[in-house]
Length: 454
Ligand code: NAD
Ligand code: UGA
Image 1: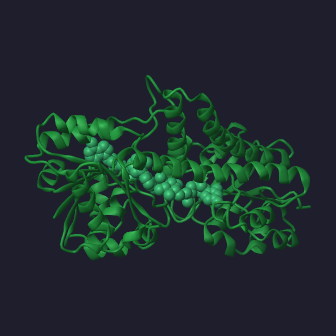
Image 2: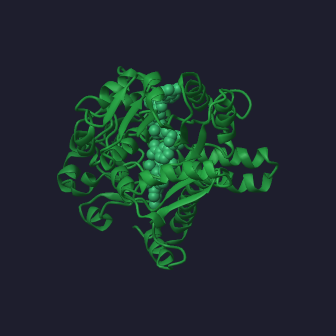
């Protein structure tokens, strides 16, 4: 059995590494048109930072896992081809700003049609709008060869990808359940996962249910964050504490406690684009009320980011021009180097509009990435990239914590306080620090939804 995966990104790389680890008898080729990315996958410095991933790649690379730019040969030799390319929000033409740009997926389908000498199983691993499989099927059908298209969306979260892949809540496979050939293809893919995932966690559905379930799962997760964030605003107005409210609400087993951490808003490459895609689909199918419902989740997220930036400005007397703000964390969440849609980008963008001086420290995000996300040059005197949190805080008026990195919890805040201007502020955008202790050290502290802070 040979597997090929087109797209060596945050999903393709880790997912295929795990399949290679669990299926030593299979050859797995991960291919990409981005030569730099492939070079990094073949080096000691992987393009994706994920706890535990280096180890998985070390055990498999060069044995049954191969990274290459030779897309054609890998497809030609494979029995199963995964499509794991990016499906960003369309930025042009019809549906710009909400529909998915499927041009990368379509070019994969065309490439598979062009180079395949025989039929294969083609698996949608990327997140696709419902009914995208029709596009792929139509292109492949034109070859006259027997292809089977399956949907197998990925549910891993960045920062925990390896454990999510090793021990998934479920594996979802959508296919043509109504024909014997369709059922055979579903079983072929299911049997790969069944090497390490208990059968009862492998869910099979029709194609459209599988495609739509992925968008729905992300929409529900994002909705929980927007829901708790909306309540955080009310906490600040009333003296309630969002963490206490989240704990009390989440203790109800029907509601559950996960994904109730109030924050500066969700980030990451997928929640926003998948929600926008859901909105687009609802509009496309003439369901404006359903579209408006999901649109509100994204509006709340934008509001939360704006609200936080504004709170920093207001606390610093409405003036941050020329003041140094130490920004702790830039990644969209902890344990990843990914900054796509990071709330830090919009929040720091607001600070720069006020002409603040920003000193950044993130343990994994490069200086080039931060500057590129903010659209500033290396010469811009307002932006400094530091190699430690202490360096960033030195001489600052305020610390603005934007990513929940574990190391921020164990810093010597008494030493930091000494090095800062007074009054020294901490704005904890993730509610991850010990606020009473910081207040005891003399900091002025503002968290999210902490109406009870002095
Ligand atoms: P990514 O941008 O990190 O990687 C996609 C890769 O595909 C890029 O390296 C790009 O060069 C390559 N590519 C694009 N067109 C190609 C082509 N025609 N031939 C060969 N390579 C091509 O994206 P990602 O984060 O890995 O996401 C991929 C898909 O998985 C998206 O649909 C996303 O919604 C979904 N997803 C992502 C995550 C996540 O945590 N990032 C989780 C679940 C699902
Ligand atoms: C999310 C989903 O959790 C995955 O199941 C899905 O596969 C993936 O999107 C995808 O389709 O790309 P990811 O974006 O990597 O994974 O990370 P999450 O842990 O979901 O965090 C997303 C954002 O929400 C982060 O900015 C995080 O800080 C924020 N968040 C998360 C909160 O603000 N509060 C919470 O309680 C949880």
